[in-house]
Length: 346
Ligand SMILES: Cc1ncc(COP(=O)(O)O)c(C=O)c1O
Image (cartoon, rainbow, N blue to C red; front, side, top):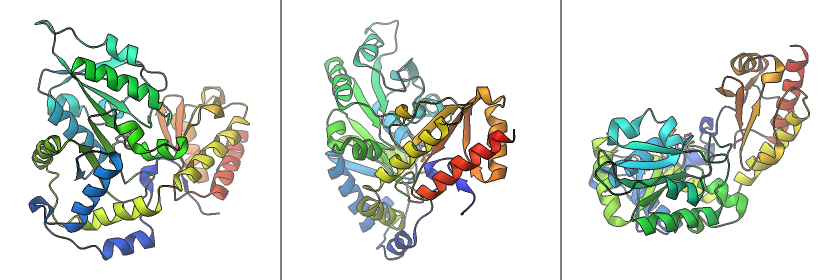
């Protein structure tokens, strides 16, 4: 069996030989001068995929989110996000550091906020408050367990946003996981949003890259902030070629990752001391509580790593496992076996 089995994240995937070939063949130019034909093609493809006027290629999902937040807001504004949102918790406090924006967190269920919760957090327009100018949702929701935003909830939040003159940003790093699982189009979600991102370096298997999409005028301003952040790249068409390859070859197969995640969850649920509900696995992430093993998550993580299965601890007793295109069904079955052996010998 191929060890280690790396279930830490879908960001660990490596470009396949066919993707590398597509990268090697890419036509390139200076993208700061907008002369990279492969990036121009990718940006047009992504704008179309999301039903938006334009899109912008950026180095990372974090930059995609933070460029959008910077472009939509002014220092002293407030934005509404779920308490566990990636852009709020895992992007190095960039909302504060880069945009000077205050966060109004909402406690969503598995990361999913309701329109009522969001509306209740909108500040009245008076001198005592920073204006609420942005709402951000995340689909699929990482810390929520790979959970999927229902299309109706997205529509309802979009309606609240429009009624109050507030922008709605979608962190769609893994939006295609939601689309494949629910058999809906990206535009079923994005048509309710003002801007949306997509990451290529997660389940889609690319080495680098994300896009942010939105109205043309917004993307023009975002392009300037990308340059300010140091994200203006030159002959990066080799990276865009990987993204185009991924859109053409690696989308439908996300369903395999979801099936593997369910298989993994069912296997782990058989282990008495692990607490998880396999029915909560919606896409490619499995979270469980390890308190009853008598081990902290960090210790269990170390023991499992020694036995050849890698994973992340996300809280003192919480572990996250992520399936992706570099992990096979056989490796998932093997990983469950390793769990059983490690926990029996503990
Ligand atoms: C939901 C979500 N948004 C944004 C990001 C940021 O992506 P990157 O690591 O490319 O900055 C991640 C990364 O895992 C994520 O899970």
